[in-house]
Amino acid sequence: MNSLRIIRLIAGNTFLEAVRQKLFLFLVFIAAAFIVSSFYFRDLDFGFSELKFISDFGFGAIVFFGSILSIAGAAQLFFNEIENRTALTILAKPVRRIEFILGKFTGVWAVVLAFTAMMTLLLMAILWYREGILMGMERFARDFPEGRKVLYGDILWVGFLQWLKFGILISITMIVAGFARTNLFTVVISFFILIICHLQYLARDAWAEIAFWPARMGVAVMGFAFPNFQVFNVGEYVALYEPLPWSVIGSLVGLSAIYIIVYNLLAVVSFRSREI
Amino acid sequence: MAPAIEIKELTKDFPLGLGKYKLRAVDHLSLRVEQNQVFGLLGPNGSGKSTTMKVILGLLTPTAGECRVYGLPSNKTAARKEVGFLPEAPYFYKYLSGLEMVVLMGKICGLSAARARERAWEVIEWVGLKDAARRRVGTYSKGMLQRIGIAQALVHDPQLIILDEPTAGVDPVGSAEISSLVLKLKEAGKTILLCSHLLAQVEDICDHVAIMNKGRCIRQGPLAEITEGQGDTEIRLDQLPEPEVEALRRWLGERGIDLRQVKRPQLRLDEVFLREIGKADLIYRQGSESVQLGSQVTSDKAGKDSENE
Ligand SMILES: Nc1ncnc2c1ncn2[C@@H]1O[C@H](COP(=O)(O)OP(=O)(O)O)[C@@H](O)[C@H]1O
Ligand SMILES: [Mg+2]
Image (spheres, each protein chain N blue to C red):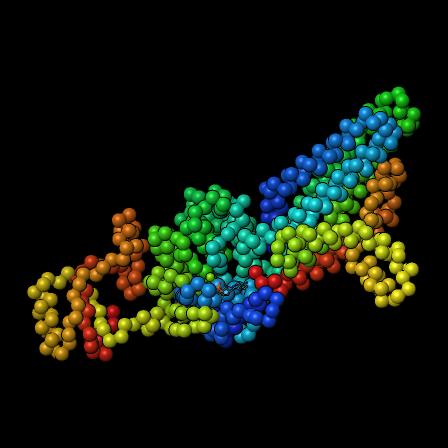
């Protein structure tokens, strides 16, 4: 179990480095500012649907800034080790490449967990506060016949599922970083893959209609190689005050676990032959 | 017992760009470092010293040839268990203090948290950085970086210590201190492989050397054999008055030996400096404890059986 200890040590050190970096604090600050700002759109007087707006807007900010943090953070924290030559010092110890990669991944994922947790809790606090105000207003009181309507437990679940998606994104970035020469290249390619993951459902919808079978195969393979990130957009449930079905949670957890494991193994393969 | 390091016909090519042109950084290098040697890998910049070290540490894969550390192939993680490494131009996590960094490295090498702390203080004290231990590594001077680098290399008490340019860019006091640390490690029974382009400086501490040029090994062997002057004999005496010099010259003349040079030994500038700042104890020259100011006599055609040094 020495491996687990080494992974934990490298992850802990990566986390420490990240929180002492400006990018992390900057993103926390900006995302928090976005989430709080949604609260000030109240003069639009959405009334009942205002809470839906706050929740949509809040999760939008979490997904947007969380994706930036996942990609830029993973690339930055990886290339710091290469460029500052600290990878040389670490890998000259009895440390395996797989331990190094998994340590880096875990460290970045922990940073993103801290970010997602903070932002989700902030969003919940704002919703709670605004819901209380709306309930007290005569105009909207009839919208809340049985007290609070927002499903706060499910908001936590949505936050958790976004974090799983960020885990997939971090592993993708680690694969690219394993062979890439520069930080910038890694970030650009990873964002490109992020876009593919968001849009691949379009190709998947169309694949059945492609007559030419090699093309159909190609689309099918792409559909498996890149996860469909659209399925993680479960904020709708919360916004519509519908409970998040367990089947949805279960399938997303399973999907994330498979992609994270496979991608991390690929990242190890990609890093293995790298000359430090 | 297997030698500390055994390299056979090691060749390492680096690809140049996308073409099939390759840069041969190490070319059919063979060497053997035995237990408790201080082995110097010397040569100008770009001669392949760091590349060789990285192969020994399993950071690079050889293009051809083999490399074993204590009998294990160097690409095995287990081969690095008994190895400590000071990288060239060491950069460590700048956001950690010296102590935190050494503790982290100790834990990564498998020490328990308590043991890592204990050992970290030991080695930090040993390299003389106790007062700076809680400062961030980012604020260290070049000499301090080298010393904290040595501390992290030693934290798990390895048998083999590999130092890449340990004295490059360090002032005379710093480099004399590093030399004296290396000699202490040898006394403690460790094996040291160090590389340097400062050939004169490491001459005082190595007992075996390999001289590299453009990836090839051009000379290799015990230092005394390699640096042995051809033909002359040097004798060092206590202060010798002028009449005695004359008597000695006559006595030698009768035996057909020409006394060619009588002089007071010169100090090297770094030695003068160390004396001036009261650190004469750091002066060390191969084969003598420290230089005594006395007469030095050089003659030629000494009998082959006469003692050399
Ligand atoms: N990663 C690399 N890619 C390409 N060339 C390299 C790489 N590392 C070293 N070299 C080249 O290999 C040669 C030997 O380098 P090195 O072993 O660092 O020399 P030394 O340590 O003796 O100064 C140099 O010409 C250097 O430019
Ligand atoms: Mg070098």
